[in-house]
Image 1 (cartoon, rainbow, N blue to C red):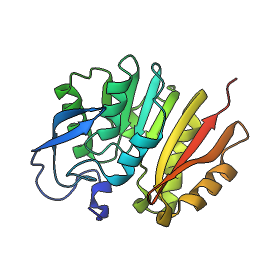
Image 2: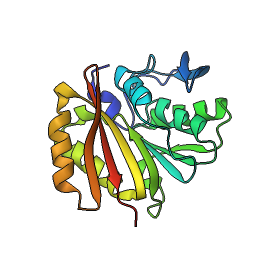
Image 3: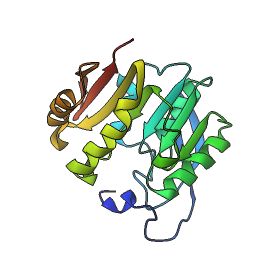
Image 4: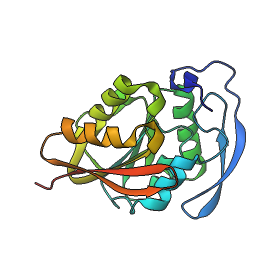
Amino acid sequence: MESAHYFTAQPAGPFTRKPLTVELAGATRHLQTSSGIFSPDGVDKGTAVLFAEVPPPSPKGHLLDIGCGWGPIALTLGLMAPHAHVHAVDVNERCIALTNENATALGLTNVAASLPHEVDPAVEFDTIWSNPPIRIGKDELHSLLLTWLPRLAPGGNAWLVVQKNLGSDSLQRWLAAELDSSYTVSRESTSKTFRIIRVRKASQ
C-alpha cells in the first residue's frame, strides 16, 4: 500500500477486521488486520529484513516499535522478550487497536500500543526496532526519529531498516550529524534493497 493515508489518525473507509495468518518469532500466528494501515496483508519486505538481520532485543527493560501497523515488530519483540515491556506507537488509531487486539490474542500482556504522547516521557528504551515511515516526508521523519532516538537508555540500541533508494545513506549521515557524541550511528548490513542502520547510546 503506497498511499500516505495510513499516516492519518483515522483512515478513510470502514474499520473492518479480517483474519491474517503470518509467521512471527518462528511460529504461525493467527491475527487480525484491516485496510487503511501499512502492509495490511502480511509482513512487508523491510520488516522481514529487520527480523533476519538484527540481534535479539534486550531481554528486559523497555522496548519500542516506532510505527507499529498491525503489530508485527511489537508482537515479535513481545514474543522474544517476555520479561520486557514493549511499547508500540503509531498515529493511526486503527493500528493501535489492531496491535493491542493481536497482543491479546497471543497472550502478550507485556505489549501495549498507544498514541505517541501517551507513552510515559520518563521511559528510556533498551532496544528500538523500527521500519520507519519514510514516505511521510523528510521533515516529519526527522522529527519522529528525534522524538524517540534520544530516549535510548545508556548502552541501548536502535535498529532501523530503510530502503536504499529511499535515502538510507543520507538518513544515516543526517543521524550521525544530528545526534550528540554519546551516540554512534553505523550501517550494520545490507540485504536485498534494504540497509540496517544501528544507533547505539554509549554506556554511562
